[in-house]
Amino acid sequence: MTITASNAAKQTFIPLARALARAYQAFASYDAAGYQNSDLTVSQADVLFTLGNTAGLTFTEIGDLTLITKGTLTGVVDRMSSKGLVKRLAITSDRRYTKVVLTTKGNKLFAIEFPRQIEYLKKRFDKIDDNTRQQAITILNKLVDSFD
Image 1: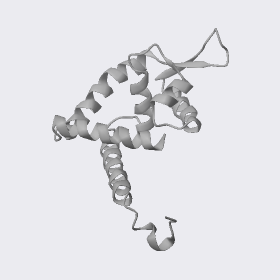
Image 2: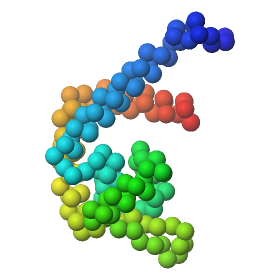
Image 3: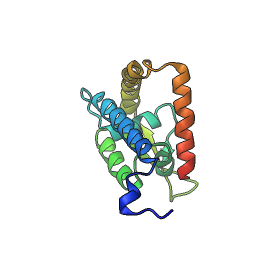
Image 4: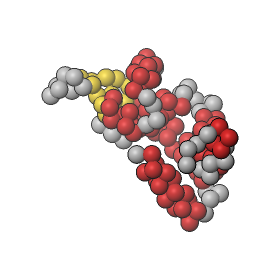
């Protein structure tokens, strides 16, 4: 069946797409509100939390583990570096790559902010029973697979 302007809005997946978008927007809004009392943006927190408890990661690894685009990531890391939270280290075995590591200040902030944000999010996720959470994970993974 060819999709036309007259039948496009009648596609059965549209309510699912809208529900998915609303769920993401609700989560993103709540998550962002959790940083109101910190000196971190959502992207900076994403990088901080990704680097925490690691020996550092390359830009490619950080990009693969976060929702930050490659073009945006450089600026995020630059701003975090100017705050003294991260530093860049050249990888001696391959000078094309740079590892980003948390500084002492970054590790201290991670130790405070990560558990605080997890506790903040936990309040909402605890409203969903384990079975429903598992069903949601299964369905969302199927959605991801359908776009790969």
